[in-house]
Length: 431
Image (cartoon, rainbow, N blue to C red; front, side, top):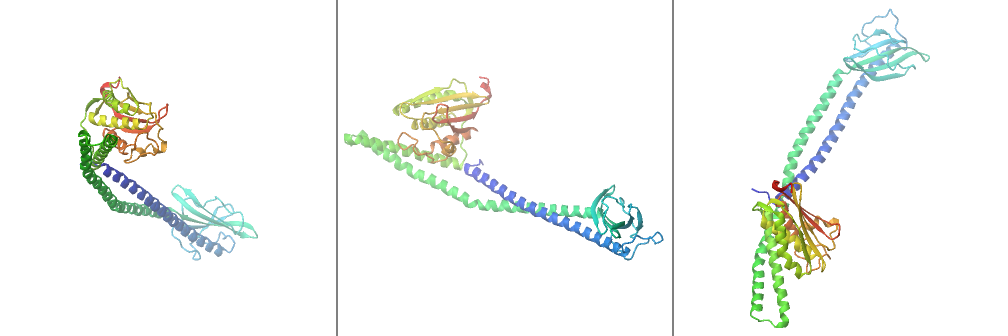
């Protein structure tokens, strides 16, 4: 089934709402995940540093500020708390190992990087090794501010790094599951949120269609009765102008009803085109010729520049309708004695048609709004009420149904310009 204009609008609205919701949820999940990872990794690092500081402090306390003599044994010390993956070394002032009281070794130790130069001071850092990385804490020992040696503790960060990676992967997995669940919920919620809007569109469409059907018969009867009065001479001479106004307004009402029915039908189903290879230049010339009398009644000249050929796969009847809408709009906005020009040309793979008037022009802020139904700019028309505000909306529907566009702008000479761009056929691209 063809997607209607309302369906397309609601689909775009739902996609934008869904994208916005998911973007906000993504930022929330990423923010919470990053904060959780940061705090978790910081806690793991703090645990390592606390364990290392406790082991080194115990060894410093056991030494009492003096280096061990060479006669002391190198067996593990009961005064030093056993910490997995940890080595406690006693170094001389040159950084050479005097004792290893934990009885284990770690690649990269001892490390002479950052040895403190003041008794009681310590240095902690992470040192890279061939097997990974080691967290190293070095404390200076001695007497009377004279550094005699060092106690150096090292923690193999292999298990720590593995735990850190596992934590990050767990947070990522939970975040992805949360986003997936949020996406499912957002799809359901946005679908439900648009139900009242869809029902409102449908109610409006039904109202417009029903009201238009109800108005069509009275409008036709008013015109028919007025024509009978005129034909039978049942109206006094001084009332004929009023009768003519009644007929004109009945025609205008009939046109409005027809436009409303047309728009309501196009909201319900896609505009159906009967396409054929059509010379847009020829259509423009014929349409301008047919509209010359209407322009003359309003003291406006029509000019056409459409040498052709400029062919497109188009519905000729709909193109005539589109051009008449633009010509009628241009005439209605042009002062007496002005000229409305229609120009058709090839532009690469496209057929482009410009309709220019010499009216007051269109403010840039209004150049999109005027294509919405019932939009009429105040103080811009010269004739009567300025139309129904539906013509340009119909023109846009016709252009878009052909796969083209319609835009409002301003020609160099001033006034307003409406430019219709349609996909052209390949046969005359070189023309």
